[in-house]
Length: 207
Image 1 (tube, rainbow, N blue to C red):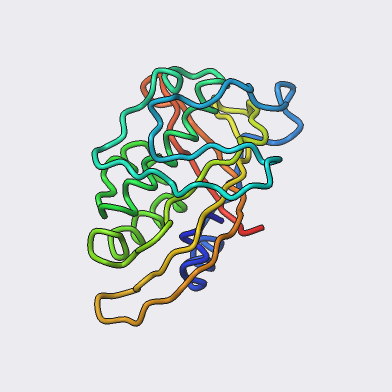
Image 2: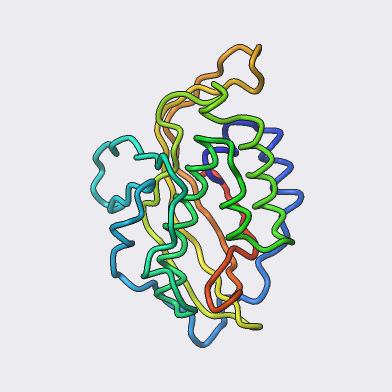
């Protein structure tokens, strides 16, 4: 669950009910394994990638003021490109949470991705631009824990996420609700479109 889920328990339940199983990426895949250890793109501005073993506090996420561009490392349909795509996708999430502009996020998502739609619906309603989010609301990518090829030209895997403390207003007149820092796991399935990966389905759970 990304930190948008813990912002709204009802939204979390909606995502979990609506999100389909991550098909075509079973752990029995002959190419299953740990991810490429190459760091995410330096152009990935919204995601603070921090080693999971540091035990130190994370700096606030850097939120892009303009639409993030797909970095060169996320171009193509290799496993390494899929790993880099996860960092890029979190940049797009943070951009949507900041501006309420979900177009770039949905352009990098499959039309049938229910988890993606859930996030987009939330960000359109609750975002920093309209005062709905304040503080360290951005998601941090800690690590892509695993990534592997499945069936049907898809890849799957999971990533560790973390976030800081922030306040949320579900509507302009609502009282602010405080949220403490938390960790989560993103389970994902990517599909190829136009030679690049897009988010096929996702499920996010709080750990």
